Length: 336
Image (cartoon, rainbow, N blue to C red; front, side, top):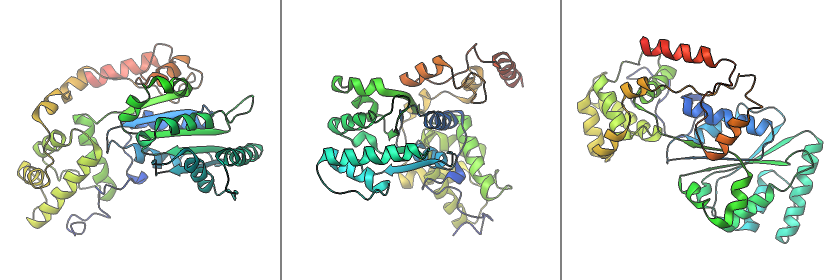
């Protein structure tokens, strides 16, 4: 309805995960790079967590477009499964012509399939979405799948995407062996104020390069306030605001329109939550230098994988070949 009014090629704020609109924030880029490296190097287990709407699925969709040609991926979206149902679902997703039977027989057929794929130099990847819904028993079964390996490498790479409850679930003492298998753990945090603004501009540029000034500065402040920097909520607010702007026959979205949208859609988040979020000035005075995948030490850095297994941010360290240059660039940004 409003696309023609604003001369958009398509709606910029759809809530469906679309890799075309992937926003390469430092957080999302690190999550993506961690996934790519873990898969290409056959590291085994990777866990990505984040709040609902933080962009986990979009990162995953973008990942599929960047994997090597010899990679085969299966995605499980129904995480309310028994152990046997999970294995059967995996076989179906990989289009294996299997014979129904006991769980052990299904595992044997999966193992046989994976060995054939390895012989053909095919890297097999399993992605399980909404993994926080998996029972402890099924999570243990997933761990057992990681035992399918040769002397040198894993037969299957497993990625679990889930909400923060997944991390809490892994604290169960019964899942200690599972935790020890995790090669990379990354939590996708919400966007800060500057990133939220750039996220909005990024999506607008993709549909109309001349449309970045549609939202007033105060409107952008309110979008961040009420969304908490969660991309999906940003999309919902912006989409509703564009529709309201069309109804009012104005191409400038003001704070008044945002307030109306928030009131109508009940997007209101607590003022306390907003106040606890770092301001743009605080972000600039405490810049973060993220580990660069182009670094010559990126693939052999022990510190990187230790941090990854703990879910810590992958920040540049003094071992990096470009550490000094990175620091100087950050200083220039702060001065400017």
